[in-house]
Length: 484
Picture 1 (spheres, rainbow, N blue to C red):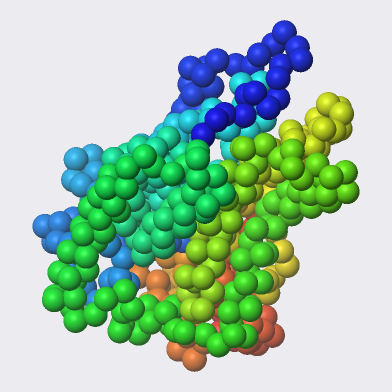
Picture 2: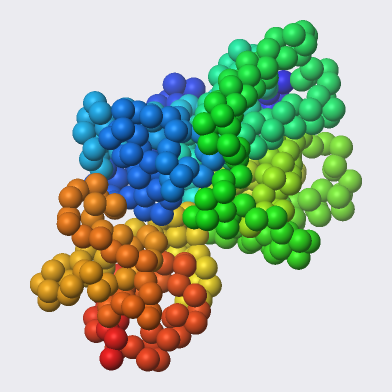
């Protein structure tokens, strides 16, 4: 594909940063973020992946998980994590270090994509939008398999745009090995390629079909072999019969699908991204009003295809089912959304000062995303912004209080993700915090970081139980309730 440097010719002496400086800045930024997170406890779904990796480490790296841990995902990411623990020890710093290669890979692949789509003098804005994306930043301080998914997806996108089927096969294989969502994202790559061929066949149709068939066929065969092995050993595929996971695999009617669509739209608007959408709407309306639609650059068309294919395929795969749709599921789409907004702005013909004001607004909006915290009773994607960092201090103080006051742990209940230090900090504690039961427990720990307390349980705690102790930091509270 032709790059966009020609569409925005330089009007000043400064031509923009060099490619080595750009890549070096990105790599240094992501390495620094990872290093700063080495002692942060595990959070949300990272806890579940650590449980699986722990079982694999203790059972000779067995690929098949027990039923209570097996939700149908391929086991290779947790096997990788278990391998890192085998070499470096089962510690927080080693767990965070394990995802550093994927974080650096995201910087590398995103930098390559920015280099392909934007002129050097526009790289700083593209990189600012990348680094400020709240959900991606939040995932970088966690031990998230979604970093692996995003890296492999960007690798596949760059391979598509560069016409490199062997490299595309590597990205696709990585997606298929990480999770079921990776399988869906592999379908999104195929949809992206088909859409690019349709929009611009001269630029994107490969000269030979056989290499691309092999690029899909090789990873597809590897996935088929794993699925066959899993089927032979367990008797089921993808949709687990385990009650622990089956609730997230139920088919929904049209009303449930509409509700899920509303969740997807909310996630795209959350954490400051609403202002990107509003800015894009303004730019599109302005372009249509002025009749500038035909002047949209190749970069704008490519980014629109990337965003449309990714979002549509993921929606088709997830909207019909009851699986919770996390904000992090669409991280690749958020990047394409931000860069599409930037490309539309560059295409707009607006005066330079107006463009600068719009870009400054977008950056400020994304930076403010970590402050977007909703009232109690509204479920929040706590793992998708840095707002979740405020949870760790009051949790530690509450744990210390429990020890000092001699609260009997066997009469204490709470809910995910409030677990004992063994689960969150990977260190022995002798604790075993159960899922709460208001009819059984004498003590209950509640926090607004916990999304799984039913409204009826929260009402009962606040009206009928005694608030024994509360610790707060910023917008996060952790409360200990005692049965009267």
